[in-house]
Image 1 (spheres, rainbow over the protein chains, first blue to last red):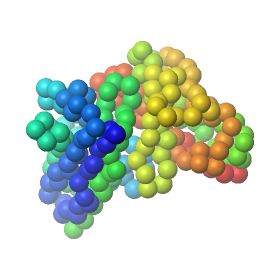
Image 2 (image 1 turned 60 degrees about the vertical axis):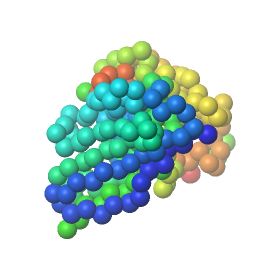
Image 3 (image 1 turned 90 degrees about the vertical axis):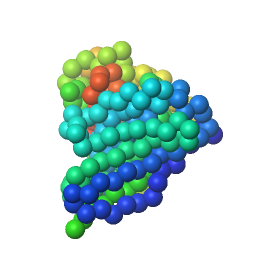
Length: 117
Length: 108
């Protein structure tokens, strides 16, 4: 079955960087894009950006431009999201999701990133 | 950026009742690129509806979506106990994708 499995929880200090992975299985990885969405504690969903697994084209949320980089490794069917210069308000659960152009489906299980001194 | 406003913020209903959730966009959503998601505590969101009215794979037919332009609706015809959750709408028709703030559906 189609599945996205994310890396484990991270604790980072302010100013550090975090890189979250998202390993895909059950479909042809390069046929779909991957989007990243985050959810701060008790809050709603915030779109972070999208990457084409076919050619690496990206589209980032303006709010995160300059701090986020999304990449893929087609040899391992894995997508990555790196966020730099972390602040306390970056504390959130980070999700990857397959983005076929008909909504996001499926989603990864989520990765909790905690930013604390 | 298209702002999506969901109403009501919280909806209190009983099992067996009909639920109607609204999502209003600040400008027209291109080609009805509007989706609905369900999220339960501690879980990732699950796609229910895409293209404003198409049910995702495996979604029961008590869930239906409608609307176009700036006004969209998710209807749950007869609530089951497992339907009590938070629901989000999303527009994916512009280069800057946005979500609504969510509607919490709680048991009355």
